[in-house]
Length: 57
Image 1 (cartoon, rainbow, N blue to C red):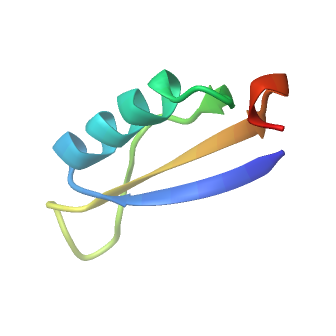
Image 2: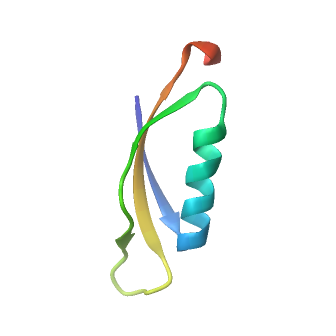
């Protein structure tokens, strides 16, 4: 399993989450809520846990 930290604008984070969920060979186990980064109102972070599926091998 991989734990991924993603950082960017809200729009980019939601786009990448949908992108990950549509990939064959990747099972998205969980995705956190958005967290604001200190010192900016533009950039946020989000965490995901993903695993390879049988198709990826």
